[in-house]
Length: 74
Image (tube, rainbow, N blue to C red):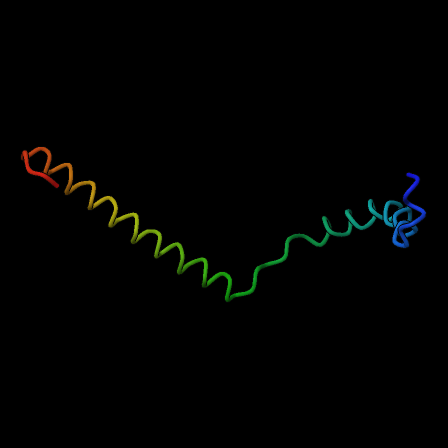
């Protein structure tokens, strides 16, 4: 507390606290915002790439398991 007098922004704290509940209620009433369309497309591309990598990994594990069953080195 003794150092707060050296912080010029400290005087802004009380008004921020006083208005916090009102601002929080306004945000809740507004509802969520939607991401930009480019972010949605990017997430879709990443999901598709991840699915392809997962499929490749599963194929690799399946091939290794088959090789082990046949007594071959993978």
